[in-house]
Image (cartoon, rainbow, N blue to C red; front, side, top):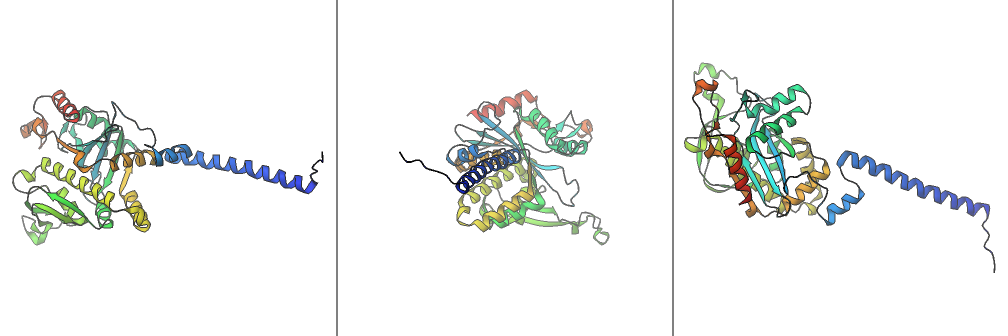
Length: 339
């Protein structure tokens, strides 16, 4: 049998190839390690995200509960006070999603202030403390464990919607607000006008499907001075839910995979407008869950009927408190989620 002889040159090439192979493996491992640390993903879970559900999520009783906080941001008064407080509860098995609106004026005995100040107080203590404190305070209100938090800066909110070319919102109740604040004119003396009318503009929305750009959508969700029921925080909560549903629908129908430049721009815009304690992997997994959820499966829950306005002298300002107790609110929320 003839022996195969390797020349020193060929042996050298073989050694180089083996070294390069193991160097490549080592480099891939290091890249994967850094990628995992920064995103919560690894090569295995990336593949799982593509063909299966994605990464493991924090959950309780097959539900992932996410606290959504919308803040004025920018140069507005109280830029880190949360105008919008919503708990999104996603059933990981059925993909049904509930949006629970939480009025910002609910009084917190823990804070000795309204719940919309929780993020502000927590952030004043330490960076990242806002999400931690907001979680704890809202858990007390709804009686659900909050697994994640996502914040939205309203100064960037318009850009997200405009990037998508606007959204179609079903306005269920027409309203007019003659005291919508004009940004940047909060301290305008209005040439001595005692009513400071120059600080406000009148906005109006007709009922039915309305196509809204970013500016219109922002006014729709933030309006607080319409006459009648539409001037209440409860109506604002309902409108915020409507816009979230419309935004989700627009993103799913935009076919971003056919428009990579739009997808890239949208990613940058959303990244600038939001913050979260979720890893990228968790965000993608939750996004995949929501993508599988039909719009008709979005349930909207309000705790309005369980809250009352106590006499002003009790708290020194307008606030909301449970008519009976929080145990009653917790029972209602749990029942609404299960039925």
